[in-house]
Length: 368
Image 1: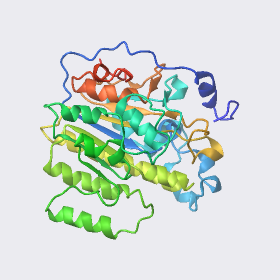
Image 2: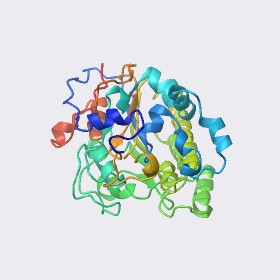
Image 3: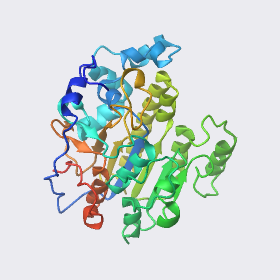
């Protein structure tokens, strides 16, 4: 994004670029209802689509769209509110009415990363640890030297053995440092299914092994989602990370139609996961769901890109719904950082991540 860009919201970004979130003055209540936390990240989903829906300028040749008519039928509406509801019906039909959303720059609610890289490994590490690490400057970075909030919680007797991660990208075993942390991480093509003798797990293993790999390091969202559902049928994790990756892959390919459709699928997966949590008496009204992204993307012709030199890729979004998060909808005049997610996960479970990791940012201001 460049200052002077013709889009209406660019003005808010240009003048708000230096705004940083204040230290949270909210204190988590002594008695919390949350006993389960699920963090879901859809890689590289822009805040522009989350808050405004499909972008007209990208629904044709600029977005490499072959069937503009069907794309407009499915996602174009006359108002931004209607467009975002068409694209993300769960986020706007459930989370926005029962929870909170951050990252709407038009409402003075910018959400931004603190690392300077603006790509995935640094973004996920910042999200999981609560701070940016300048040493992490490549997606090929080795196993994370830093302790994530997941690893820390897994050392806690209340959560030991009940922390897990599922993702399409095969880097998460390194980002979470599965070997050191002892957390089961099911990621990529070769580690996508948890060990199980069930017929459904066997079928999923066959599908992972025989499906043509469009991206060598990133499996399809649908396969991973089904693997996750199978796992949840036999396990009861209290802390869960889920990473969908197709949105980023289709965006890098410059295919706006596939980017939108994979984002819509992700919203449907969220709805299914939330319905499952609410249907199970163990997790009903005891689960907090946090949804976010690891980085933003550029504006106009740079919509498909991100990285250190892409202006605007530092802006992200975050949504939270759960029993300890009041229904406040889109938060106005509330800038936040990606780094605040780690302490939020801990705080929801009655733990103080900042005390364990002084470099970490405070929790998001979501509490009553």
